[in-house]
Length: 326
Image (cartoon, rainbow, N blue to C red; front, top):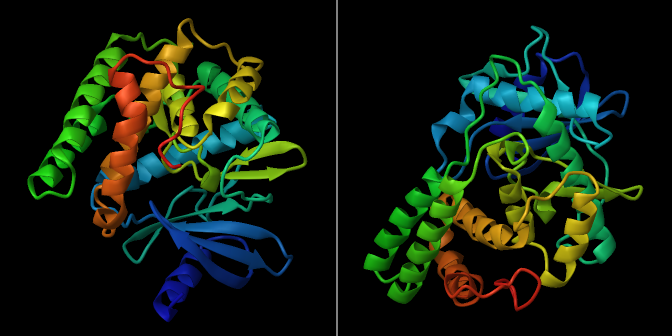
C-alpha cells in the first residue's frame, strides 16, 4: 500500500467513531478494501468504491446504490441468523462517506476461514443453507422506497456477446467459440424473458457467492462482499455458485438449499441455463480487465467445449462431466 492510499483511508476514517491503529490494503476488484483495527482490537472493512474494470457500469458506484447495498445488509443482520458484514454509519448518520471526490463505506469484519475452492459435501451444504436463508429473507423483505440496486435482466449478457464478437475479429477468440457463446446466450435470454418475476422466483440476490466471498467458521458459511447484489432470479444466484462448485457436490448444496427455500419445478434444466447466464454476466466484467487477454481466451475455450457445448446440444451436465476449470 502506498502513502497516498493510506492517507486517503485515514482521511475517510475520520468520519467514523473509531480510533484506528492499523490499516492494511487487502485487495481490489469492484472496490479497494482495507482491513482496519482500532484501539479496542475491533476490526472493520473499509471500502473505497472504485473499479479496475473498464466494463463496470457507473451505476454500481452511485451513492444511492451503495447505500442500498448496506441497507439490505443491515436488514439481513437483524432478520436472519446468517453472519454478514454489518454496516457502520458515519458521524452524519449516513452509510456512504464522500471525501476527496471518492465514496467510502465501513463494515464490521467477518471472521472465518477462506478456502480456495469448495472441497467437501459439508461445505457445499453450508453454502446451500446460507443461500436459502438469504433468498427466504429477500422474498418477504419490504425494501424502503429509496432502495436502488441494478437488475440482472440479461442486458449485460447482450453486452458481453457484443464484446466477444469484437475480440474474435482480431483473433483473440476462436470463431467457433463465439458462435457457441451466441447460441447459448440467446437461448439463455429467451429462457429468462419467459419467466415470471414473482417473489417466489425473483428478488434481491448476492450475485457473487463464489469461494473468494465465503468464510467458514463454527459449522456455517458466512458470505461477504455484497457489492454486486441486485435484483435477479434466485436460480441465477445459484448458477453463479455452481460455476465454482464441482458437479459431484452440487446435489448436496441443492438439498440443503431446499430445506430453507423451495426450488421451482424443472429447476435442474433452469439451473444449467442460469450457470451459463452467470458466466456470461461475469464475462462482461472480465472483458474490461486490463489483463483479460492473457487468460480469458483459454477460459472461454474450455467453457465453450464443455458446459456450453452440452447446453447447446440439450445434454444434461449439472451433476456430471468435467467442469471448465479442470
